[in-house]
Structure formats: structure tokens, C-alpha cells
Image (tube, rainbow, N blue to C red; front, side):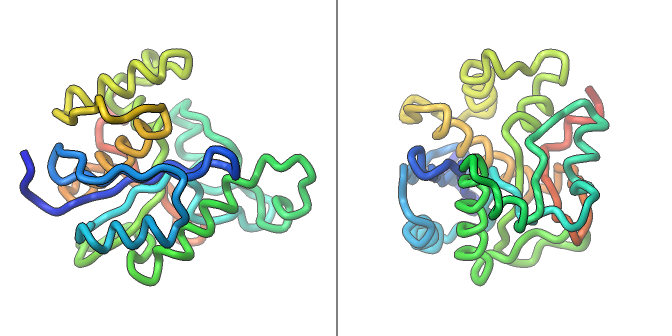
Length: 213
């Protein structure tokens, strides 16, 4: 299937790993970029007339002492992620761990003038970008008890295979995760997702299988 709007997924990495972009049209991979700057990825998304961009990175920093509602809501489902700090705490950190979150921030800053960040509620009337999370996507398809980080490469490729996406060109787990984010964008456009979170802390979007598992 090659009809329908194009969608994109971005796996965010640190300085060494970089970011990975996959663009799907239907189930066909029409673009796959590795270690490109956000501006180059945006150029490709505009070229292919992408409608929605799923991104594996926090779309908002934590505000105050309380954690983001999106992360808390997933944790109540026993789906755990890295806790997003405030931007100030991330800036003050000396360990370098939060570099990928700053890379994600740059991606959202680059994309948001053209792809506004998802706000839950109402119809989707134009282009948008949104936060998603490959482990939560895997839980949506396999169930929480089956999804495993130890075999994530196998399980996540199996999801793409089930959905009809030819994944042989995806050389790494980063490419695979970008494709899963793009797949979730298709589900979002079809209205088959759950959105966890709130406006101040942002939303995490997951295909709507999660609660039935």
C-alpha cells in the first residue's frame, strides 16, 4: 500500500549516535536518514508532504517538583521511562546523560513552526508533531508482560512486519524505532491512539491497544 499521507518518525540520540528519520507512505519506506541535523530532516518531511511526525523524546521539560503526568500515567500501567527533569536540572547535570533530551528539544524547536506539537482533543486539521515511546508502542502490540527490552530488536521488527512495513533497509534498532514512531503517526491520523498527559507537561501518544492488554 502506497496511498495516503506520508508520516515520519524520528529516533533521538545523543551527540555520537545522532538522530534517525524514517518516512512512510502507507507501508512503504520512502526516506531513511541517519545522523542528520534537524533542519535536514525537516527539509525531507516538507519535501514528502508529511502530515504527522512522531518523535522519541520528551516534548516538554518537567515543571516544578512533580513529574510529568504523561510519564506518571504510563508508570501506572507499569510502563516505565526515563524521568524527564526540569530544563534547569538537565543543564546543571555534569554526567552528559541528558544530551539526547536537548537534541530532542532542538528537533521540536525546528519542527514546531511547521508541525505544531500535538494538543489532545479536537480534530487534527493540519500537520503536527508529537511525542511517542517505542517501548510503550511495543507494549501496545505485545502486551506489557511480553514486551521485553532484552529482545526489543526482534519484537519491534516483528511489529513492522505484522503491519506490512518492509524493514530490511533498517540497519539498526535506531532505524527500527524511527519506523515505529512513524507507524504510530499513521495510527494517530486514523484516530486509533491513546494520549497520556496534560497540556503543561505534554502528551505521549501510543496506539490504542494498550488498555485492552
